[in-house]
Image (cartoon, rainbow, N blue to C red):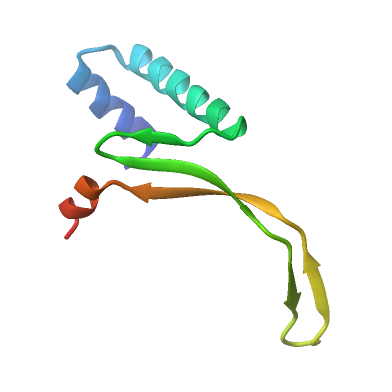
Length: 90
């Protein structure tokens, strides 16, 4: 399902126009992005939780050249599905 199909289906279910639904989705994603950038975890009841985790720096070895490289620390977005969502896919 692509963005257009998702927006269309959501607008039918909510009874909004496709334009209003698209604006609503843009606003929701903007708020989610802003909260994650500020370091806050986001939990959606019945769906799951999004969280930024910091991966520590590490040493990686190129298997061909055997050269060691330092991989810098980075932030990674993680998602943990809720128990309800897990049960629906069993």
